[in-house]
Image (cartoon, rainbow, N blue to C red; front, top):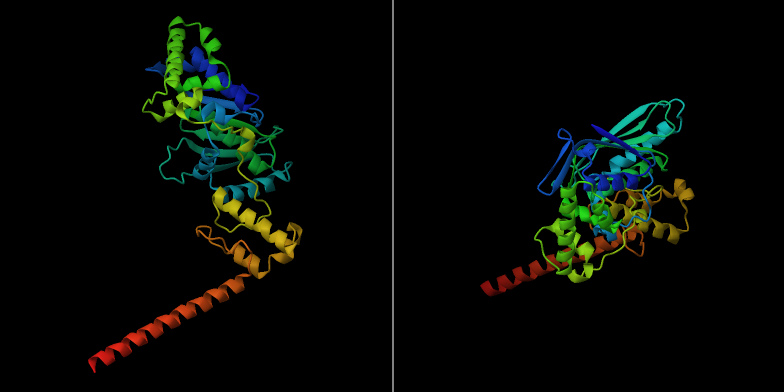
Length: 363
């Protein structure tokens, strides 16, 4: 096992990027990893990060070509928000009296909502340890692609802890059975720091030549708008020269990637995705605005017919529980009943007319 300690997640990522480029023996000893066919592998990697504060202006859009939809997809696939809410209630209850609950370790499993994920994120543990000032979130990974996915997953760790604890005063421990990086994908580090001087300082001559060729290949391919036929490489080329691919890179800062805030929103018992929760949140705000109620009035408002209707809504339905004009549910139900009766009456009358016509034809 190899253990490294850092102050912040981005420090951990930059250290690993430079270590991979340099081929540091600590990562690639014969029994600890390998460098073969343009791929670097390391095994048994543990990262301890003291401050769960991700650099707010870290630009995933410009560095890696990521979009907001990719962040939403990450949350929806790996995180069961309903289960996370239950976990948050349990842990915050423990945190209220830290003098008694000085030692707890509460585990959870990452979801795979798409049923076709690679299972890179396996499980996590929220802990408070004796003689430690701050709690800790430990995340176990099956494998980590260290150039693009590792910082993405480290950001997710930060946001999970913030969501549960309500602050950033906790540490993060990442345990990865395997970490790997591709030579071409490594060039994306150029979006954060000029990679050419780093390559020029590589001590191993063969390795230095190898990465100089890789950088030259990427720049040339990006200039010619080459299609490598491999999505990961296409992303690299587009980041180096987006104009050649008629693609404008969008800013996506770490500070804009959050899980969400739905406290004091009367969500249904089953509401596992960000989209469903935000629809309820916007709907609830509109309801409060129309009625003049505030969250503090909720003790009396919760018994009203409209709120009961809101709480019983099935999030799997496409339609919201009531319209954008916030009509009373009983009015909607009455209108629906009247319309249904009218349609049923028309059907009966039509059948009667057909029967009468048949009798006339027989006569």
